[in-house]
Length: 354
Ligand SMILES: NC(=O)c1ccc[n+]([C@@H]2O[C@H](COP(=O)([O-])OP(=O)(O)OC[C@H]3O[C@@H](n4cnc5c(N)ncnc54)[C@H](O)[C@@H]3O)[C@@H](O)[C@H]2O)c1
Ligand SMILES: O=C(O)C[C@H](O)C(=O)O
Image 1 (cartoon, rainbow, N blue to C red):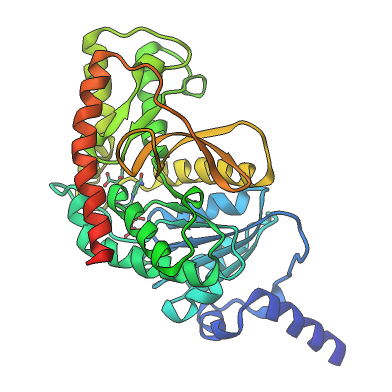
Image 2 (image 1 turned 45 degrees about the vertical axis):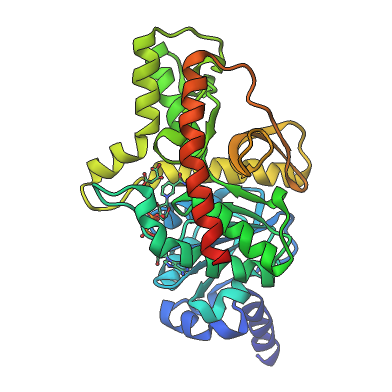
């Protein structure tokens, strides 16, 4: 009996960090019912904002991902319930939950990849920039935690406005002396996912066979689909180009309006976030030729950050690709995108430097 108790105590120390006792009690999961799958190969991933509209399906999909060995779910509310629920899934990753600022350090320590969908979403009539006042502070706090507890982790930043939150994160990391531009990636994958879907509809193809590069940023005119570079090579009428560009640029608003006050894209975003996180993990594993679009530190234009195709490797975004040849319509779109992006980037930088 004594031996059994010792074994249970050992397992529970592994599953639950010392300061998460309250959470364990409140979620009602008995320690003895859990098993630690210590030593399984894979990456350690934390989701910050894991109890939210994106966070929950994202956590579920990451629990299924065979590249993940440990999954940490952090939020300021409701993470005990989400953790208890997801931990019952019979997949490989060990799940641990963390609640509130006091547990941020434990949530982050040792992580290889941190995914951040924390923050408020839009309601109809709002722009992403209207979220700045609340989300800037949330991203700042979380990134300070990353700088302290897992400065070498690759960060996938989802919280809006991405065009400003990525510069905020960069400034926080610079201040802490931990900034590695390769390891900070703004997630623009949903724009690519939407572009593939809408273009496939027009072409009558399976979206899985379509690849549309989407560059620039993640808001309105800064979302710039390069329809001249679609794979498989395709031609579009001017009417189709305008319809597709407009629909891709306003895909987020389409969902916000349809949800009528109940938030923004969560399910398609969780899908896109997992697609992107999986690519980052394959890069970290050393797979060759993993290429996706992301909003990163960049020298592709005169702006310090820009979304374009990047090659993901053992160190994060190891190569940032040039835009390739643009047609006249895309060149005009690029100028518009850069103007808005410059202001959004500056706003993020000033928030930390002020
Ligand atoms: N990059 C993209 O393509 C994209 C797509 C969709 C949504 N988003 C953005 O993602 C964010 C989240 O959207 P959602 O629909 O999941 O919102 P939500 O309100 O459903 O969930 C947000 C979660 O963040 C948590 N949170 C708040 N402050 C926190 C903190 N300090 N630390 C940890 N967690 C905290 C909340 O408790 C909540 O559980 C929004 O800013 C939204 O605009 C981005
Ligand atoms: O549109 C939003 O506010 C959420 C997200 O950025 C999206 O593109 O769906």
